[in-house]
Amino acid sequence: MINTIISNVVRFFVLVAVQVIILNNVELNGFINPFMYVLFIMLLPFETPGWMLLVFSLLMGLMVDLFSNTLGMHAGASVFIAYVRPWIIKIISPRDGYESESRPTIVNMGFRWFLIYSILMVFFHHFVLFFLEAFRFQEFFETLFRVILSSILTIVLILISQYLFTKNKLQK
Image 1 (tube, helix red, strand yellow):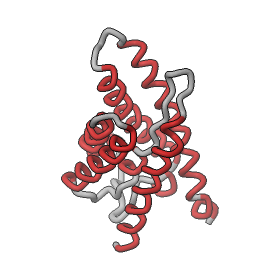
Image 2 (cartoon, helix red, strand yellow; image 1 turned 120 degrees about the vertical axis):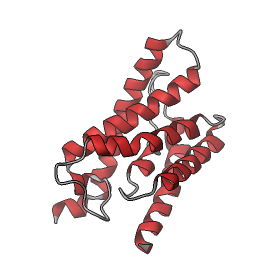
Image 3 (tube, rainbow, N blue to C red; image 1 turned 90 degrees about the horizontal axis):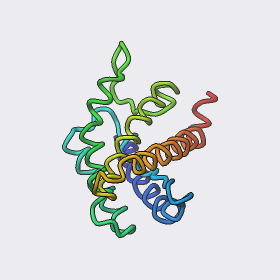
């Protein structure tokens, strides 16, 4: 229990730092912006209560907003994916359900499950974020194109991070 809390607190601050220091400065062709901080919300344990998931997501989004000067856009997108996360997990649940005390990681759930989970979570986050940023539907297809390209890069970074930081566990 204490190890889970400590690892989540460390993950929170590391992902905020990576997002603010490195990834906020990455912009490819004005369309592709990776937002890897959503990994924090994705990796919270399955049994995390809904209210706690919303609070943690709000805090994560506000921290990124604070350093990115984006006035609540990241907080809104983060709270949205925290809200839909239980339904996404329910929709893609395995036949046997989830083991107690397990986390939605690539090691615990397998590549296929984690890829589907990542695609859904990241796409919903980016969709809300970029349409809040545009705040109009006049450029719908251009914004959707940004959502798709940024989602692809973010998912690739999330998968790489999962393999980098769980490498020893995968080999055992």
